[in-house]
Length: 295
Length: 318
Image 1 (tube, helix red, strand yellow):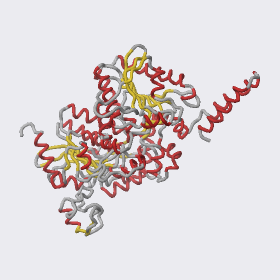
Image 2 (cartoon, chains in turn purple, yellow):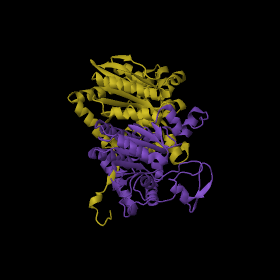
Image 3 (cartoon, chains in turn cyan, orange):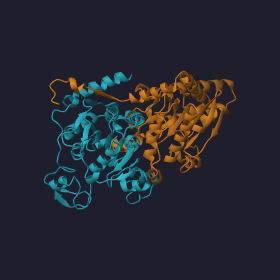
Image 4 (cartoon, one colour):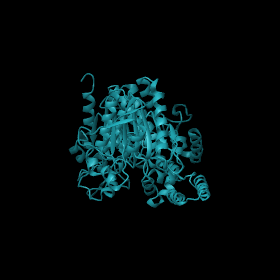
């Protein structure tokens, strides 16, 4: 039965001793490098112009020329969003196991752990924005495309429950390719789990702001990402259920310009607001302020 | 040799049986058929089950509704955009009690399949399902859902109208329903498109149905960059009813006759009816609160992971 499977998978995991126990020896540090850290200079993906890495970082990881938003690591997102030193991480110590016994999944996870310094594609904790307390959750698209397996699903659920326990508003920054294929049906069921937890959360009358960043697709779009009381999006982020490639293959037509981008979704009424990175912190602070008992 | 070829061979044998008049020859062939069934068709690989789940003659939701329920009235529309033919739904009676039935409808011919979009619902289909579920909750009717879809439809219209939101909303609302939800996977349970009507107190699968995060073809092309390895993917994905029961995802398996449900639809439907009735009776003694709580706890506990007590680890710098 399942417990046997769990034990088996756990024994297998022990081969990767170094990364089996996932705790952090060093505190998280902002990487201070944009998209792909290659050194002093960085080329923008959109306009192909080259800038000093430092300039991009100082511009909140936004291209100074064409306003392209670089993908952000979870730690960088936190450092941009919350008051310095206010973040207290919760929900550590989870271990990703390999339920389908796929060759190479564990080594892949170990590799991502080493490269990102995270234990999974989602971190959450207590934080403050301009003095207002909240629970903040951030997905990291650098960790296996931010895909949702058992651990991410569990941590998302835990973050919802933590916010519920503390009676605090919850803000989530989504960046995910969807459910994690390598964990099969368990990943799929995380969709029901997280959505169910949000139902409980909402019944308590608490605020959930979901911020969709590039990319938000698949099973994450079809669960907690779309369930925010207020849904914000970063400019030009890819947001959708099915990926553009799959849609193109299915309908055998070219997709319209700007399809599944934030602005498209705004037009179709699927998001509340498109907010660029320079104004994100202020916008969220304002929203939090609106939901204070006494303004 | 996969199950479809074996089935062809079995059909040949059965055809010869019909042509024969001689009693002894008939008995001989009959014996042969039984032996063939028991030796060749009993043990199925995961890929065989995939093929059976997608069999063109497989029981559809409408077949099951007709056979299992005494009366059925179909209801249409999501009240916002249009009626999605991929999802059938309405009010039915089973042994003297009213229930709401929602199913994903596949066709048996090409025309039928085009009409119901190969059982791939659009957002309006999911919203229609949600409307019917909310209605059932209001009138305190149990909900029975019949799952059979390759997945939610990926198209421009579907995305524009919020496919992701529609599925998410269903998951969200279903987890809080105050009436029991019994889900039965008839054929293919494809990804979020299936789960969107599948958040049940009890989830059953027909023996030869599949339930997975995506199709074996998609899995093979994403993980191994080769869609032709779908057979291997089917084995690796653990998508059969037996695998899912082992993983603790589903409540139980509904038996099918040897060779698949379509060979004896009536028997299969009887089994389905038995299971549904047993489930309904099980929830008779539950209060609304207990029903919601049980469903929530079931899904809350699903996950394949370990956790160390971080605070108690020695030598860890926080």
